[in-house]
Image (cartoon, rainbow, N blue to C red; front, side, top):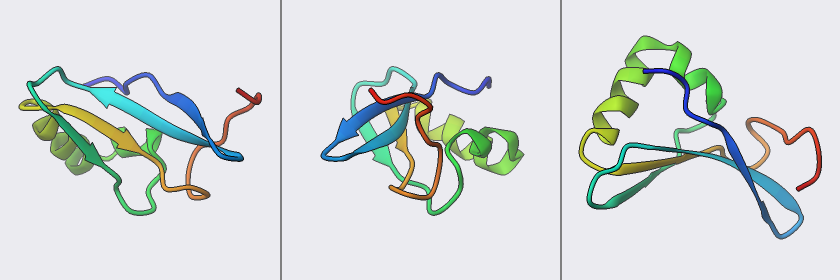
Length: 75
């Protein structure tokens, strides 16, 4: 699976990075420890895990604040 589009949303005074994968009947929100969101897709076991979750749900992945991607321009 290709790396999904990375999006940003402003929460209070910070940008939170997230991705949406799949189109299942229910939402599943998942925050995966300290791994950078985009890099999860480069590690085969992580990509397989995310793909499996997205096979039965609309998977919403996000970076823990301060541990991942940074928005280049303010939103």
